Image (cartoon, rainbow, N blue to C red; front, side, top):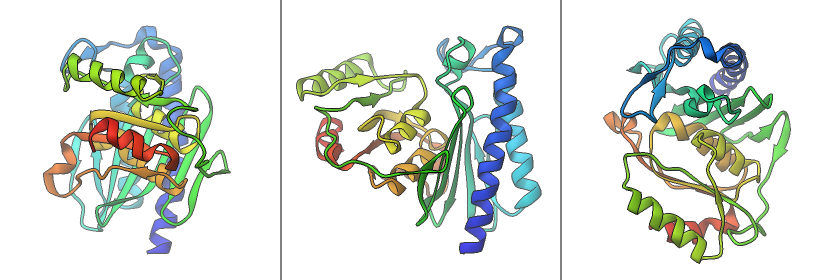
Length: 262
């Protein structure tokens, strides 16, 4: 298990950097991209997303052909090894196509229904967040450990929203957080904001509906940095469906669970 995990962890880090370089090249010439919409005009995709996912899929297939693979753009391919890679090639496509740096490559690996590897690379900042089960979390090689004195009242919480939930729900969520003495940001990439929780930049992150490819890498990072996260259903076809996502530093967990009703 240790050897298998180490090999996949090293591969995930290498792939994230390579995929990030390809995505960054597209970002720097994004005016040439054809942008398509998915569920609505805010939910977009481009050839950059698809090419980056195909690059990651191919690298995983070459090294670990029996592993499963779930990507945002091309869905789930089952495996037989007990490991499943869960990937968002570009999380934050809306910031990406609009010329903002808040996007990332997110790579998680599941084993026995748990995220045991989480790697998030933010190319515009050249920052690599990496974690594996029992090995801790790092940012560019520096160990991440959460400060228990940080709360929703002396730090900032990240929030996310999309059209899977009503505007009224989102408004109430923000209102409840502010009434509790907190404040918030939203940067357009849930995966990157989860990485920020692990790094102590945010004290927590809440989104009422997210997919596995958006959150599982961040969940591994937060856990290994000493934080808490709400369980995400990964068994069977639940892995391809959305669910509430909440991750928090120790000093914010109780408040954010109460605000989110989780």
